[in-house]
Length: 302
Ligand SMILES: NC(=O)c1ccc[n+]([C@@H]2O[C@H](COP(=O)([O-])OP(=O)(O)OC[C@H]3O[C@@H](n4cnc5c(N)ncnc54)[C@H](O)[C@@H]3O)[C@@H](O)[C@H]2O)c1
Image (cartoon, rainbow, N blue to C red):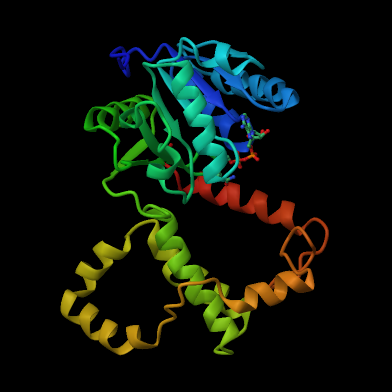
């Protein structure tokens, strides 16, 4: 039986996988009043996560508690809402959820995945109707959207209660009706990246030009007006005419661009190796991360 107490009174939540995402999701839950237990396969991660999540909840008027447990069975036993945020691997997530669902028969079980099929992740759960996809974006406490994804077997009630819980936590929860790889946000994002990389690999322009054009055209607009509203705004007749002219030559490869493989084999992995499409001298990654965080914060409603 699902616990019916959610979400007005989320009481007990568990986060399994307390890395970059999990520890901050734990903080959001505790800030919203849930008593949270964090669990991770790495004991050091548990301690770090408890510290981060407690600090995040400290400014709440009604914070929940945050504790850690290195015993998965103890961590999930009393939870009303369990979210996993372990590595992005279908098999690892599916076996974890199989175990969790056997340890707790009443909680909603959310899988935090960026692109993986929720249905496959839920496949071995004792009752897959209570497994739901929740795609939080990084950093999860700052980026407003959480995509709530209906797997093939996810029940409507579980979808509704997950949306209500996330709204209670102050998130902008959106309902994704079909479980397609990448859901909504990452499909849009990677359609753009595919064309961006194709423009470079086909010699249309250099890598710097792609980003310069993107940042100073559509990048300036998108936070205010999305592609669907923009299509209406410019007119659907014009949109169709542009599509007729442009779509036939857009990249439609169903695999990653071979240029990526060439660069990876050369050891050019991007910021982490010092070179990718552009040069990454020491300090540039940190500088860009800070600039990005400052920009995102400045765009958010206060
Ligand atoms: N990093 C991002 O920008 C981002 C954004 C959105 C979604 N996500 C998704 O969130 C999930 C977590 O990503 P992350 O960046 O926080 O990863 P991470 O590597 O920082 O953290 C993963 C944690 O899971 C733990 N772990 C691994 N297997 C485990 C298991 N079986 N049981 C318990 N703990 C286990 C690891 O020890 C680690 O602490 C992934 O599915 C990822 O795709 C990440």
